[in-house]
Length: 224
Ligand SMILES: Nc1ncnc2c1ncn2[C@@H]1O[C@H](COP(=O)(O)OP(=O)(O)O)[C@@H](O)[C@H]1O
Ligand SMILES: [Mg+2]
Image (cartoon, rainbow, N blue to C red; front, side, top):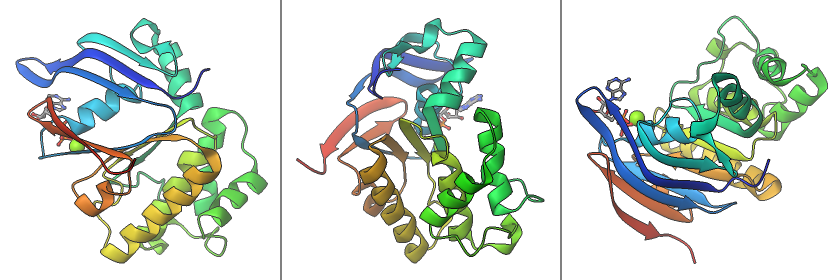
């Protein structure tokens, strides 16, 4: 599949009477790190879920990596998510009774085949080589999010999505997670779309878009 360019045209999503996303035109070039800001309820997660193939639009056009997501069947969309997208949420959604390495292997299992050496390696890359056998409850919030990053990158996604991944972390852990994402992106060259409430976190991106009541009201380039 082609590079992770995101192209939306008059993209909308309604939930009954609620118009969560008004027509949105957005182009995210391959390799860009896009930050998404806006008040609670402004449509950030809705946009993220559409781009990641977790939800379907009500109208408009949506292409990711050259693939028309509206044209995909449920199976096709599931394959797209599995092969193309890595996601990190605010809540870690790790399986509580599995160790860190088993949680990463579970993601490999859903993608193709578990490979413990590879899963260990991914955890070493996020600085958790010494916490492989610990369960999520034995890890700090920052460590849990680092397991989620290992889980998100294990299948080499072209598109990494974050929905407030540092929303529950203190400043120090937030900066560690951001630094780590920056390092991994330098190596893997994936495209990043990152929802955040934190201006400092948004500034790690190349560009920030602002949503207000489902409308893309403003954008700001943080880097040339
Ligand atoms: N599954 C859903 N069913 C009904 N309304 C929803 C659903 N998901 C989101 N919404 C509504 O859509 C709007 C945008 O929500 P969301 O995208 O979650 O905002 P944000 O992530 O910016 O806080 C809100 O008014 C929210 O209540
Ligand atoms: Mg949200």
